View: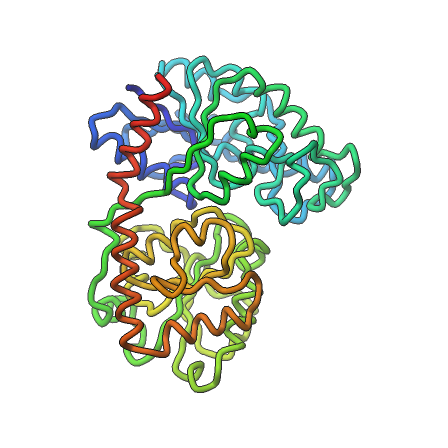
Length: 416
C-alpha cells in the first residue's frame, strides 16, 4: 500500500503530532507512507512541503487571506471559522504526481484545500477528523449549535449571521462537492463519531473510531525529582499543569476553557492552595497575566517531545478545563507518563479518563466540581500513587501507536 497523508503542518499543533505519529508507525510496519503539508518545519525526507520561496510565500499568505474572506463576508467570527474558498491550490496536482493508493486527509484548513478540490482526488479517501469542521458550515467546534444536522445558517459564531449566511453556503458547497466521493471517516473519539453520524454530510458514511496513539517508549514515567530539577521547579510543592492552545489564541480560546481554569483554581481550599503552584506551557507570560492567587511558571512553547515528557513527569496533575475537545494529545501524553488528569466530562475525555481510576471527570463547566476533582486527586498520597499506576496501564492498553497504526493498516486493507 502507498499512503499519502495530507495535513496543514508536519509538526506544529495537535493534529500534526497525531498525523506524524501515524505516518511513522505505518513506516515501521513496512507500509509506504508519506506526508504532504502546507507548512514544513521538520527534516523528514518523506514529508513534502513548499518547494521554493515563492510557494512558501503563497503558503504563508493563504491562511491570512482565508481569514480575511470571513471578515469581508460575515464580519469578525467569534471563533476559528474556515470557509475554504481560496482557488489555485497545487495540492491536487501534487497528489496525482505521488500516485497513492489511498489519500489520508487530516486537518486541511488554513486555506490549504478548497472544498471543491476533493473531487479531483482520484483514489479512495480516508479522513481523520481532528475537530468538527469537515461536517459543519465552517466552524471547528459548534459550541452546542446543532444546525450542522440540517442545513446550517443562523450561525451563532458569525458576526453577521442570518438564514442564508456564510455557514449555509459553505455547508451547501460541501454537500454538492462531496456527494459522489468515496470517503471513509475516522474519528479519534466516540463523541466526534456520534456528532459526525448525526450530521447531514456524513450520516450515511462509514465512520470508524481509531484513537490517537503515541510512542510509549518516549512518553513514560521517570523520577519526578529529576524532572523538576531539569525544569527548575520546586520539589516541595504540588504542581498543576495546564496547556494553552498556541494555534488558537491561547488563553483567549473559549473552547479550551481558560476562564474555567481560573475559576477552578480560585475554588481550591486554602489548606491545599497554599501548597500548589501552576505550570502553563504553550505560551510565554502575558503582559497582564491573570492573578490565580498562587505562583505560576510559564514555560513558553515547548517544541520537542523529550521536554514535554519531562514536563508531564514534573507535574502532579494535568488540568484540562476544555468546553469542547476531541481527543487532545496532551491528555494521552500525561496519562502515559503516569500523571493523572482532571477535566470536564465532555467530548473525548471519557475515552481517556476513567473517573476516579486514572483521573477525575467533573460535571461540565461546574468549576466547584473541577476544584473538587483537583483536591480529590492531590489530597491522598496512597490513592494518588494508585491513580498514577492506573494512568500508565490505561495508556499502554489503549494508545500505543503500534496498535493504532495496525488499526489504520487494517482499515486501508478493507477499502482497497
